[in-house]
Image 1 (tube, rainbow, N blue to C red):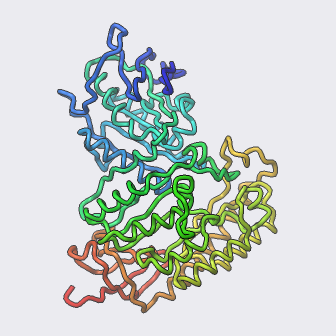
Image 2 (image 1 turned 45 degrees about the vertical axis):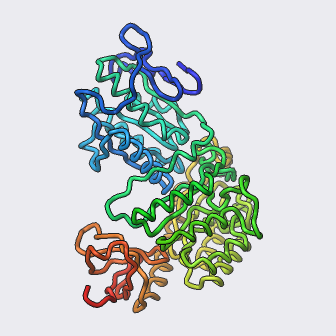
Image 3 (image 1 turned 90 degrees about the vertical axis):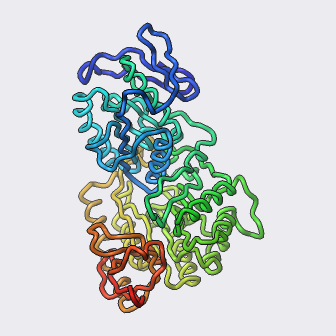
Length: 505
């Protein structure tokens, strides 16, 4: 049944999983209202504090990128404000929300596997609520219920702010003993939804935070599902972003990462260039002015967004860290063109040189896809050669994954898995050597480290350099949130170890 822009979908084959379903929900203003026993729409207060129902413990499991992490944090903050309890252990929850990723098939399969595993728990406890949020929900919509009929909520990327309302009403119906026979599916687009990702769920003495400045993507790379799962490019007002950053700093945050699908495209339709500076650079300047903020990073940019104004910003904004994530995807011009990536290997190398000219100690990471349809040995060799010349500190290397609905999925000449695997391993081996060599160069140097807290084992403290390298050292709790000098005494491929250079600590 479809009412307005939302859908309540009868589950095919539901009798195999639970009692046969009946029409159970409609949508009014984005809030699900259950039918009462006579078939009339029941009116509910929308409160999560339901009498006699303590089952409000929520665990959110997040798959994928930092954007997903930020969305999950915002959902958690909204739920807590409505009286829900956020728990760290899924075994302790009454409501499990899976915030999903669709960039690669493996990411979807992990979430589907988890949801299928939790379905057995739901059959044992009918009051248990299982929800799928985010990119996979947006990509698959109601069809996801064909595979996962026990899922109660399928909520897309522009409806995160509706999750609390939908949960309120599902729980209200069950508290009243009403049968809830259909799942809630809401993947409708909503103007202004990018502005809803603003609430934070800060941990005690948290020193770093993610701030979403933009949603969606208009680049339409041939391999990428993101324009379908995240929608068109939409930016938040600059004044709201700066206010959010200011609030975070007042709460003790010292390190902020600005997030967007193509973060360098921020505000290009909303703000005029000022003195040759793009809207994104203007935003960096305003965030830089916040007293108490020590470090600024951003991700993920596009090589086409690195104009001279942004490159120069690294030389004149001291809080802008010498860290760049610069996606390559391929070192072959022929493959870049097939991918719909509007730059060349030559332009990419020019950008690297320009960035390192401004900041010679620049930490650079990248994304690379191997095995794109039609990639020859010559194409891959060009990627390997550029990868080696770039001397990356870190890279995320992926085997091409077919994404239904993207132009690349329709291409012939798909590459065999064993070839993808071999090319993938070649770059990983090269990365390990590059990373170790660059970390070795830091031995004996003193690095400025922002102390985040105890490491996972609780034996030492850890923090990050301005280049985003993790450093472990002996310290004390009072150092959390401080910038401290650490002399590097030992390195691995991915981690630095050192000695605090402060007397009396």
